[in-house]
Image (cartoon, rainbow, N blue to C red; front, side):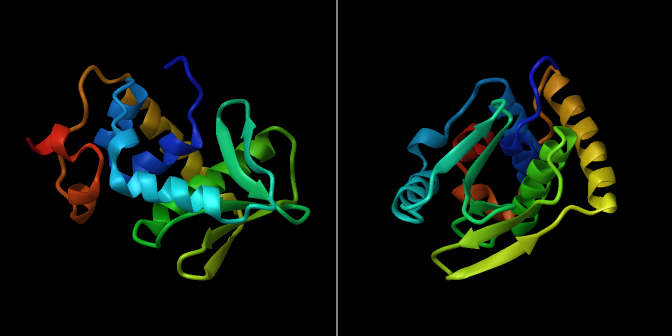
Length: 164
């Protein structure tokens, strides 16, 4: 693996490892997916006063930072909340590796009018290191991982590639 592991890759590893493999290998089908389009509109139409898409090293892309020391990630729903939490913890981990400490994060669900506070613990750091090893193994494989059907598959941009 010669590219850095991005926040999106950490997210995809939790959602679907097959999707992670496709994404890493340049097979990206999201542009025509309705759920992705809804997410883009949500991103464009919410939190307009904030500077958005803070890209750090082309590895993490923070949706916005409003108050000192709190980074924000915008999510449409809580369906795959665990993946979003790990993604945000990876952002905190990555920044900590760069010498940035004392920050926390918040996942905002504007459609639900809810938010979730996220902090990075020592246990989280150990889990992230393990996950990074898993991701490297998956993306370096010659073929995508075996198909594992999940409830979220029918709304995935890669559904046709996996099932048709």
